[in-house]
Length: 329
Image (cartoon, rainbow, N blue to C red):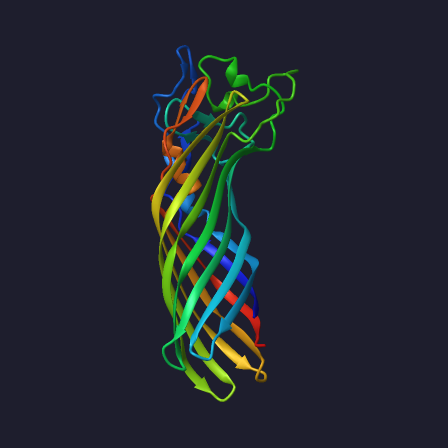
């Protein structure tokens, strides 16, 4: 039996522009309506800049070894609360912040004092059962089944809230200088203007090996590697705000995914039954639907939002430290 603590960080996501800057003297609102023919200028924030910091989680393991060398093992772990966030603006000198998505959707700052903030949050669950065979006192082969669930949510908001109707909605043409409240207008609540949420349920088989690569008295160094082929049932939910009204859209698909896991750990055997472990571990997931990648598959009109599909071509890497205790009985 083993009880361990994990501390993982995440890197790797889709390459999606989230915020671009347009010069403040470019008219936004024209007699013909929004100036959507104006392509956003300098990119100010990309989704790959949202690197998630370390988050902790538990791992529980139970294994049985027969004197013949055969055995089984069961393991579960989760890592919740992987988060990253970044805000852009207000700019000096003043620029107009714009988020451009497919279709007709454009999102501006209503006011020059606002920032455009994006947050990416992920969660991981893993449950596996393996048959094991000791080919030598130092090497054990593994083969089994595994389920992983990886969830990812990307959300864009304006901060702070609006103080009223922006003057640029009433002036034609409007420039950044008109991004001020209309005197006496009521406060307007801003919902998140863009939310993409994905859930990946991976079901598959894996093979691997565990080996003791060094041993001295009570100390030992153990390495493990596993690879697997999985079916990914992926879902995507989009919530897009246009003129303060939320429009939902959903899509689902099945795709092939790949998982690779490896690590190395130092063990100190306190006695015949108890050992402590400290090490490094990495988990690579390929064929995922990550939230930023779904923006290109979300089409908008002035009154509707459609999820045209689910993009499952992303990869991500989770890595960090493990620490725990093993007890034999």
